[in-house]
Length: 611
Ligand code: G6P
Image (cartoon, rainbow, N blue to C red; front, side, top):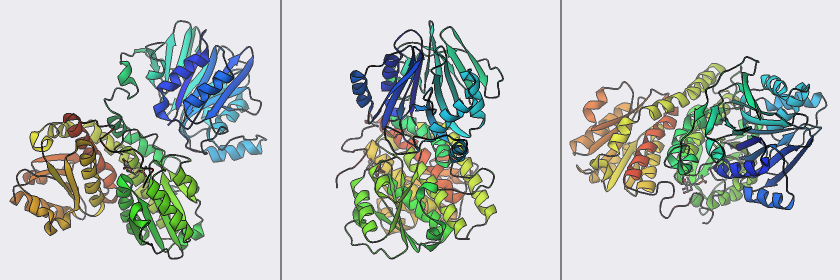
């Protein structure tokens, strides 16, 4: 998830672009760059690190011109570095491209272009677009971009300029957001409205597969095949404060709502078109190694550890390989046994958690192969691991992890399928079926997001809002959901909450059940449904307040529950990815209604970089 800004007009494009990029820095911040066209030249400045580093460089080497594009990067392919930062160029350095998204067939395109004599400078997927545009460029930048995009599969929002076309800014999108702003004899492009709110409120929302040519005196939009499109100009009336959060009151709520796209992005490029074969190249694990692992160790902290538990259940179910799950802080201090042929999978959103890093070092010293699941590209966990699955979830700003969790579970699902297929434990048709289930998850999450009335209502209900304590129960695949649901409530609303394996209820927690104790029971359809119903009855018999997460269409459960949050029917092993969402929303609304600082809960840090 990167930020793009572009400008054409009579102002200094660099000033407009920098001001806009600063408003988009929440979208990514590992490197930044800007390119302008002036007097038939294309000039640029790039810098590693936060935008302030680019500001500083531009103070030393001022740039200006009436046409330009800029970018703040959140790496998906290639580590954060100056070379990998945008804009990217064709070989002649005449065409510049900024891009947000993931080009799924970039390897293929790269090899093809290399055969045609192209030399690449970076490891990014974006650079392929610059070379493709050059390949088709015959003086008309708009047409060249259109043609280039016909070769591309994946998600993109791009801005393109060419030194031979000083009056044209070209933009296109598919799957990643991009807007066009229109002013008086000037035009803008941006990933998001706040970037250009200072200059204009007149906005065109480009749709998937559309390409726009912006000139000082007008614009045209066509699809990539060249069919003209008419878009309606919209007026934006957001206030400044709401803008970065795209109208949401908190980043946490925005991130919860991003999850359908996040899951799509985690899956993107990992399943071969046509064959439906899972490919996790960046894990750097050969087929022989994959077949030889005798033990897998998952280490993580906090929410990532809960995702690790989902991972353990998935790997053991599909790939029949023993998995040991450990808190990184425990692993590092307990003299762990690392037999030969051990694979360690650390899980970390930030990639900077101190305990997780130390666990990796210990496992490596003792001979394990380490392939991590990480969100932040180029982070310490990623660098110290032999391989990685990048989550492609975009920056997570709310301290309470939401989209990173569901994306980590999705990454584990992919890995488990890959492992099972490689070991001959899963047929192609079974894998295909599972991948189809995974692809349905974004819609199921969207359903939850579109049907939150019961969650909003319960979060205002004093029996939940004013509770001193809450219990969360789940079994099997949804035991980790209970742990994660309780953690969400506890960390942002400060209501004491415990997650328990429902089978353990009789071994202690049942003593706490009174008519003041809300018990959140995850009872979606699946192998353990009947057992969960028995637990619910036991709680009811002791007058506990039962809030059930159930499968849409399950009317019987009404008789046993005070309130119900429905989720669409879901293949049970993947249901934690969907079940997480109503629990996140519930915690969010309870915390917001209690007046808590949702995005920055007291005493918590987003990334725990000390022991
Ligand atoms: C902190 C955060 C959690 C996160 C945990 C692990 O406690 O508040 O949201 O799950 O650290 O962080 P990591 O970046 O390693 O996933």
